[in-house]
Image (cartoon, rainbow, N blue to C red; front, side, top):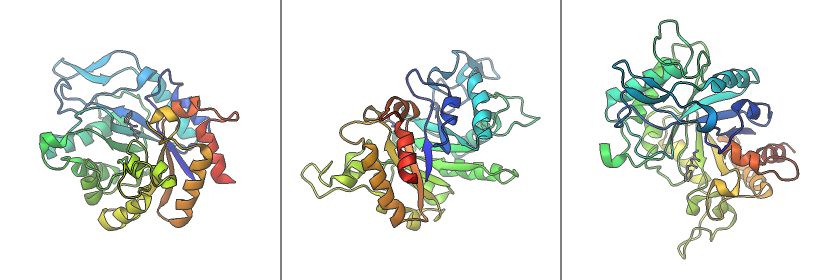
Length: 323
Ligand SMILES: CNC(=O)NC(=N)Nc1ccccc1
């Protein structure tokens, strides 16, 4: 079973390469591009935050203004190459919990796709702009859009389908394979991503079965959890299978079961013990063998700090699913 584990936002986190020594991890979305070019103060570039992994200096835009794009994250570039040499896929995650990331127009959606491809994708001779990770190129992009942008640009979050389509256009010109993932909440439809999922091609859907009690993994074990006196609750995995089969542009998108890697990685009772998690994963993996992609874990440092019988949470999940 594939394990996708986010890295980049852990407090006092270990470098990315530490997690690439763990054979139990297959995909690492790194977070986040937490500022979009249309936001005030961005000065034309997307902005980034990778916790303790970067220095404090930012790129200047062509007209000399300071942007929010970090310019010195040397270990990330080095470690992306190290991770890829171990066969891991590294995705750059857009959004995260940051407020008000939004795209103001179709053209800025296309421009942002072009920029992040040139800046973070495969290195190209003719690109003179920023390369925050040097000549290391990510294997794709993750859309973790959690902000309340819809009040700004209309009923649904505008532009993400356009941005994904533009990335696909750029991917089509490459020999190598590149990926696009989404990380919606477990409520269906996801207010920020369901429009894009219905119109454009995602390879992986990392559903966050935490942070929302009524459709959480915990509700999959305790059907009163998050009910607040209403009807019985359940993890919404089956509904996501139906949603992808009926409403998405890619009927073969792999649906991952997203879990919190430690109690403090979410709130309430939504953290599952390794035993509970393995039991629930096996249930849905056998129920939906072709749609089930694997497990997504939020987040590497929470997993690392959640040691149990000498192993990290992530390692327990991987081992539990192998036996
Ligand atoms: C894959 N993305 C996430 O898991 N984001 C996430 N956990 N955001 C968050 C929401 C509330 C409190 C802290 C983090």
